[in-house]
Image (cartoon, rainbow, N blue to C red; front, side, top):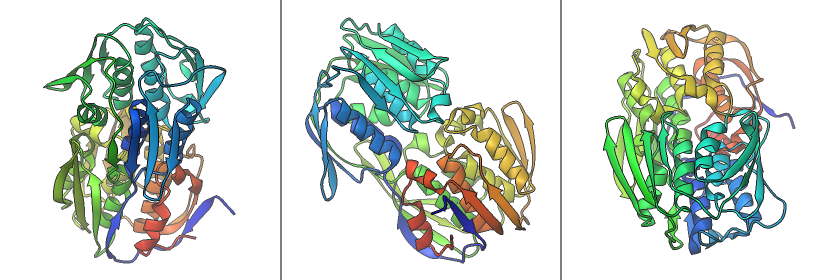
Length: 441
């Protein structure tokens, strides 16, 4: 079977209710934190994507048992000292930067060397941003050219550190936080604001943590070596997955969609803020708080008169995984949309800023770039009729799904390669697309 999809017609109008798969960031944190708890944890609605399956395989290699039940995964943690690290252990993180980086934090007290590798895409990403602070804890880490594979040997004499995170990277911050729970004393972190799922988990698990927000930064103190018990958790829907359907609805004609039970953590809500500033009317309904995380249904309608945005750079970290589909909206908006300081997009599974610009030019949209700032010249009348092929995007799942949304809303005849890439984060993508009446071949 060919690893591609063909799309030759736009989607017809729809009025539906859907649910998207469990949040990937939270799912991986659930697996890792459950593996270090004392006793059994039950995790409902765990995302069954390749990234999360890789996390389960990694903890299994470290001596942590898990099993899949009808409605939940059960993970039997053995505490902060519970990993079995004897022998020549090699962990494969697949395509998951979150997994590869965060699990390093949990290996700072390993008794033997452990090697962590990943696929070709992940092996081209910078790991010095986490290996350097981990060395300060007293850990021995080696890597080639600051990339995977990374070999780590833990220490019996860990020392707390003071760490400044300037990139707005939740992965870097969380790696240090996980190392901190293994380390005696108080680790102090000054971090540019980013996703705070790890902080909310720590609070919920009663891990000693103190957080003070001051402008752009959070000041986080963590007291280490506190054992916590197994937990029960129901993973909410992933707003990054929901974003594709928000934009699909927004750019379609006479359509309406309600997405149920989505995580709307304020550190992830950038796409809603940005699109509403572009004259969308996205409404959050039935809000509630679950173990510190905000959850809501999201209602979106088609919108004709979209307008350009001067996007505040302060929104970047809360929309970092959604900019590709935001660029699509800017392509259909009236006026010139401005986005600044987007260099972090090129640190993802593929150089997304480069690919996003190339994609917009492919569909006839003018883009002017200066460094990591871009201006997108929108065309509200944009309708495509030519033949388009999307390939060589390093099998980035978000590039693939963005391309499908473009094909289903802008017209033209499309061949989009590497459909299996959706298994990385959103294996239910095609099922939901079909529910809405799209025709993919």
